[in-house]
Length: 167
Image (tube, rainbow, N blue to C red; front, top):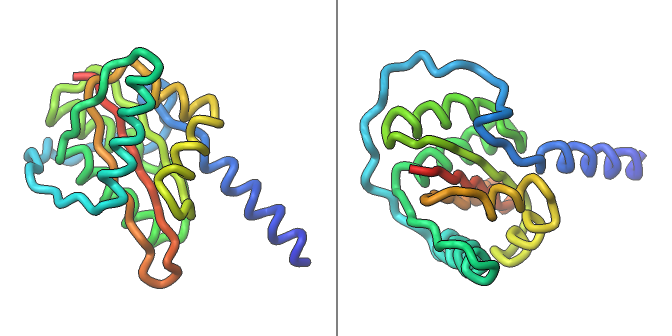
């Protein structure tokens, strides 16, 4: 029974680890009014380190570093809180997040990576780079990004949401 549970968990995480981009996202349409720009976001050490690692990687492969935008990180944090509250790892409502970033910031393109239960930023980045869809987002034609790493108080496990945008 334990082996079946582990296999099911692995499959669920594997499915959830697929990257999402605005070109392929399915989900609900954001019918809410255009929200206002969120300018305040306090970054924790894990978020700062993860963003630095992503930019260091991009520069190492000849790409431009991405600029951080607090509004995007706020949308990432909202998604992490949703995943924790619903005990899921997914891209649910990515279309709504993408539409918000497009409407509020004027993004031309948006992509998203999520990860779960990686203890270090290095481990999360390594997993993303080993996944073709996630790597495509990290190496994508983007100019800006946001990131949130939120720890579930009940389990101690970390949820990562990383959204990329081309402005």
